[in-house]
Image (tube, rainbow, N blue to C red; front, side):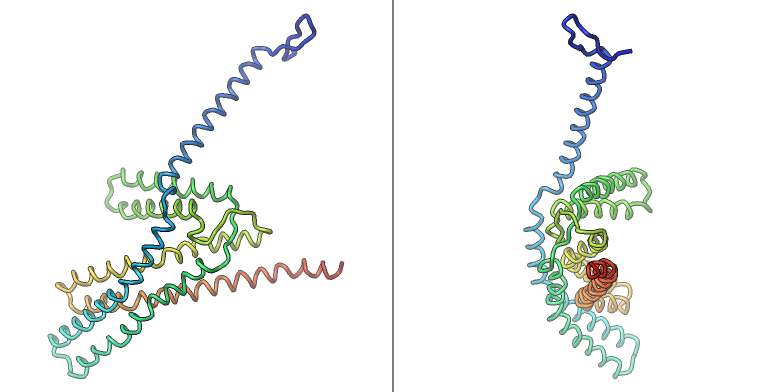
Length: 288
């Protein structure tokens, strides 16, 4: 059966089935466009903010107050340690050793902002990696909107054991939307890698670069949280509070250095692998 009718002038006219097919296609395209607009709007609610400048301001002020937090944590670690030793009738030599806590704290207070700047330089001063824009969009939708919906679903279960997981899922989703809507924050730009090796390297380095870009913010929040937690624990267990204060004083210096060396090892391993993979191609070029 022919899909078109022929009129008296020999011109084919569309049948009802053709008209129906065109209407269905138009409706599907219309609804598909509406879904695209809704998704873009939902991502824009979070992503279309001046996160770059906000993060820069946060890094600046955290780097300014972090030495004071470290110094206060070190003094409280020394003080709580001294009080605990005296209460437990510890030998005088042990009591005096508590004063030496302040020596590494002085180094941490001075070097922690510089260690954070050293780690951030990988993203701020390093070469940007390329990730396909189509993949970035898929990651935004799946990890962003999907993560938020998962968090809300877990919260609606009204199970207190799932609250922490739900909050973590929502925070992760928001961070992914921010970092992929503003990829310059993590040293990423939309583009097409030259080969699969480059693409794998970019995907492997993406989560590490996210951590590095947000490290100053995370360290600042962790230091303040550790200080408050130590003060609360001081009334229950002085020795445990001293340990918390000591960790709060030293971690802001130790963690950035560990991240720095970890990033170096990862990049070196990937570059070494890339060099090995490229050997056959270079040999073929030499033969030609």
